[in-house]
Length: 466
Image 1 (cartoon, helix red, strand yellow):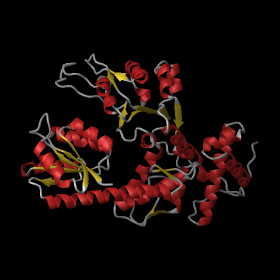
Image 2: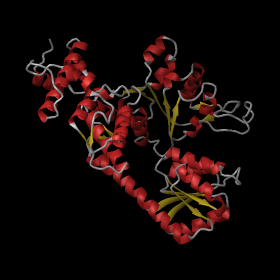
Image 3: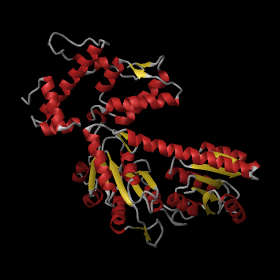
């Protein structure tokens, strides 16, 4: 199959000439304005886009072109978009590169140079796709770009596979930083809506007085400053997935309008009278305790049941067991490669600090700490100081050793590290059993491990339900 190229230019003659020049080697699509371009982009997923920044209704400035660039990068951050510009517009082309464009060419175009750049873009795109596919195939603990070997995350991955096949709304629950948007993206990529856009909205990040117009759009003259018609984010998600993050913070009046959309698949722009049909899958997420919000009247019960046809609960990082070090090592390699510092590793104290830390910020906090450590570390061994984690203050480092003859002294030997891990495991297992009144199934679920694994730990550590 030929690779796909999308040409976006308001000049019909230029579109025709470029299509004719490239048709022998590529499957070429064309568009003359932003809406048509974004629609073609989301449906065809071209390997390369050739974009002229001067588009209607304002062909003499770059506003529409830059908006088109931003829209495509929202749909696909890895998109290869080449800016076509005149010599006098070189500064704008450079600005577009800063905004995420892949490269730019100046008019009049050199056909040989254009074809060479297209070949390179297609080659890089295929390499990136092959790499992502190989990662998923070769690593049993990797799923849709997410690491998770623990029983808790494997259950989440199974849920994704099941719900992706249907069109039912999904509610993702979890603390901040657990990766709720990544889960929503994974469901989208495996669903029948994958050819459409993935539109993410943080309901907590938009001011209350603007959120209605952001979600549903507005008509020209709807309010002071509404000088043109604007399509809302819900409408933008047509044919794809609408991800409503932090849905628990949505104001009550907007909850009513969202409920209507979920029930009827129709919306009205602010200031408009025409009903617009929008077919999009809806995935919501929140860190808010919705059960409490229901009781307090802050969240509508009917909206909750519409959104939570399937609820997917993400475990906090502290309940993911071996995933903590798995993720830490992956982040260390990734940030090391990005900063030209290969061969980095954690020293024993850093490992102890990582497994002992409560990680209230979850995966986002872990990523932040390791990114900082890569930059600040003086040598190839990352320390707990580089991570800004002080393992000495954590209760797990102050427990008695197995013989009861003292405390672990922070030794950096292999024996000391093994001893520290056993102390931590014993403490976590004992606390879980006590918290759940001896209910092993509940305690195992709390720690994100299977019931048989929990029993094995109890046996190894000499712990009974009593």
